[in-house]
Image (spheres, rainbow, N blue to C red):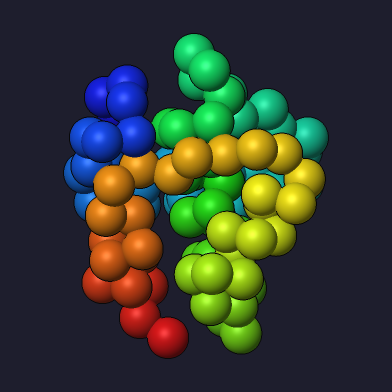
Length: 86
């Protein structure tokens, strides 16, 4: 994943990260990047969105943001709605 929130994250990278987190859900997992707000934030929002079918993108974003400042990557909302339609 490229640094900088202006860079979109490729679909397959989001899907791979979400699947990896889901397969390790019984463990405590640290998700981090250089600043901890862009790539890490995008990854956690993606996981929360995917694993909570009743949660909208905005709800998933607020859920994560209320716990830690994040600045998701450009186009994340559109990417997630294509990968995980609700």
